[in-house]
Image (cartoon, rainbow, N blue to C red; front, side):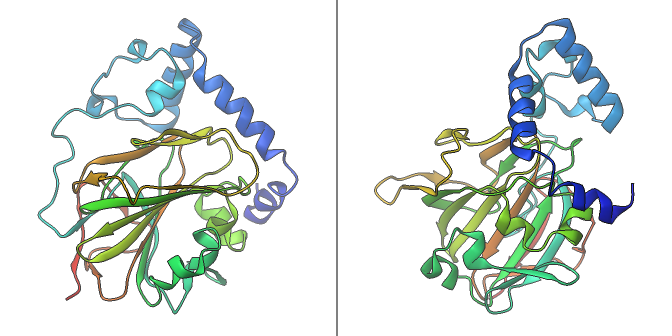
Length: 282
């Protein structure tokens, strides 16, 4: 199917209904049927089950259990770097934030204010900072980890669309990552604030964090926010912080002069959890 047509179809497809149906199916505990679907998925996408803590397909009672599977200890060693990659996936884009503008794809940018749900004061902290957008494909490990040490300050659930987030859609839908539903997690570190935004997509049944559990559903249709300033929710570099129940994209924001990306980072390059992402810019 031509790329443009595939993107245009997404404007008319019942994305919310498809996502609800996929989420319902992913929680089913259907025995042999569930195992058959997982086995097909593993073959179709080339999932490496040898890295899983539980390699046997029959050990997963539901598709969600399989999709959010844990890895064996030691298969993702953490690099000796100030910032590490928080996921398995591929680099969609990365680089400097130009005032408040984030590069999405050729001809498309979106604002930090839009990404974080309209909070101008929060967005201002990342003016002329840096960003990285990482795409998780169906075959990838779908837990998200910390790129550096941080203390949780806020979490914002921003309602939105559920377009696909694959590279073709990123090239074709303006402001994609600030239009889709997302969970914005705000942390404080020794280098200042940083954001991990978990962006939903078509068929992404829900997103969860380790401190809250499943954030969505419910989907009430309005912005929701949780404050954690009065709690000591501290995370070390490499700690798990959340997961996608069916996969999507992570957008990271860092303040000005905080991060210098590694020279070997480039768009579309595959990345793995724990590899070096960058060093302190100072």
